[in-house]
Amino acid sequence: MTAPETDNRPKDWDGVPPPPLTHSSLCPVFLALGWVCVGLGFIGAFLPGLPTTVFLIIALWAFSKSSDRLRWWLWTHPRFGATLRAWHMHRVIPPPAKAAAVVMMMISVAIIAVSSSSWQVPAILAAVLAPIAAWIVTRRSAAPVDSAVDSGEAVDA
Image 1: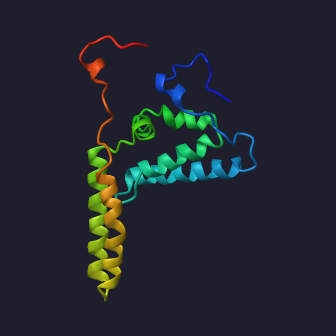
Image 2: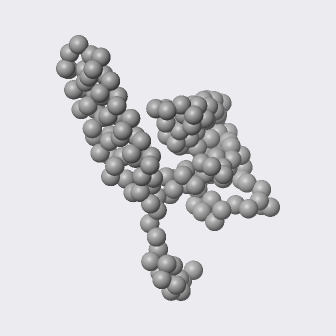
Image 3: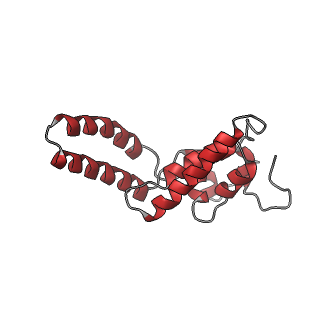
């Protein structure tokens, strides 16, 4: 199943592989997972501390295994599509998202440290979250730019 030929598909849509499990018995499971993640992402857009993009990335993955139409909907979404495409193609995490993730992890450790009666629980949580935070911070903040295109030079097609 592909997007209609009459639509305004982005050029980078052609690089996205077709859903491999379109006729699988797992399609309803992936479809349900996609919708659950869209719902959690929607709630996360309004509720501080609940991520939005992570759930939409999972939803995009699940829809790619179950529904090309829904994958296309997320891929071209006016608000979230660019972020999802940047992650999918370049593994880019925007600086505000990096900061929010790391700050929320630090707040979580602080809350657990204050409310815990022992030092082991916050220490374990910090030990688990520190490498995750380091991984997030070390991801690209912007998509790579082709220097030949930026300088106005001709690019061979």
